[in-house]
Amino acid sequence: MNFWETKKLSEMTTEEWESLCDNCGKCCLHKLEDEDTGDIYFTSVVCNLIDLDTCRCTRYSERTQLIPECLDLKQHDFAEYNWLPATCAYRLLSDGEELPDWHPLLSGNPESVQDAGVSISSYAMKESEIDDLEDHIIEWLE
Image 1 (cartoon, rainbow, N blue to C red):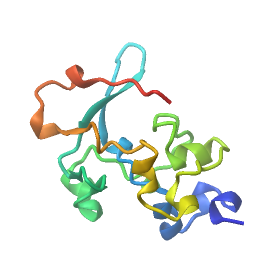
Image 2: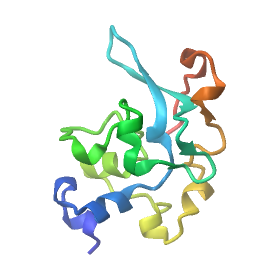
Image 3: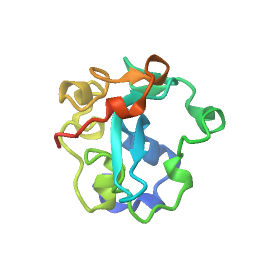
Image 4: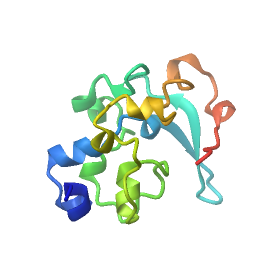
């Protein structure tokens, strides 16, 4: 059995936890919250620290110090991960779902995320390149 099939998220080692990230980059997209409804809207705008070719943070170990709004998921006790994209391994496992076939832990190929069209690399733009986040709200086709 694979560790993600036998352990809860809270029981995983740091290495196991980190390996769940498929490097799609979706969690690094800026989000807007409707103050009246609490609804979360994703934008196509990403943090300036992300490398759009790899969808990895260029300053990962210090990101929460450099960007105070950046969340370290492992450091928070979230009861639900439903605010994360539906393809996110943390959300899927939290909801009792299985990892998709394209996930690198199953495919053995880190490129499988881009091959499956899940990565943000084809459409995201850096926050330094835009003026108004509201102009870049996107809808997921999940």
